[in-house]
Length: 134
Image (cartoon, rainbow, N blue to C red; front, side, top):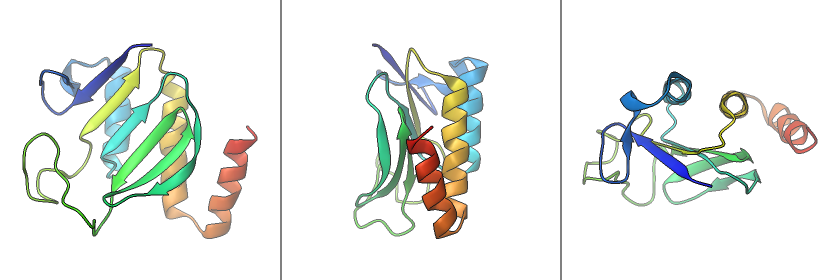
């Protein structure tokens, strides 16, 4: 399955989000409004977990992974060019989608991510069970 990588501007491997279909731009805008940095939609593999790396918090539900930069990362973070942390790296940077993307499912996961990051512990546990057995 092929994939397309969207970003703020064109590069050799990235297509500008301005050239994306409206549905993909809607995904970008929804994630950007939540302060998300990277959204990845895989073609086949599914994950159901949260991860904590040196620079990102990851929320994984089905084929969709949402990555948000930590407030105090333990390593510097750079996208494409060397920019000081927290300057040009705010908001969405990369949206990687498989060509078989289900836009509505991806929007649902982004909404679940918002609920997960703004709700109580017990509400988050309920959301995890809901997604596992859906």
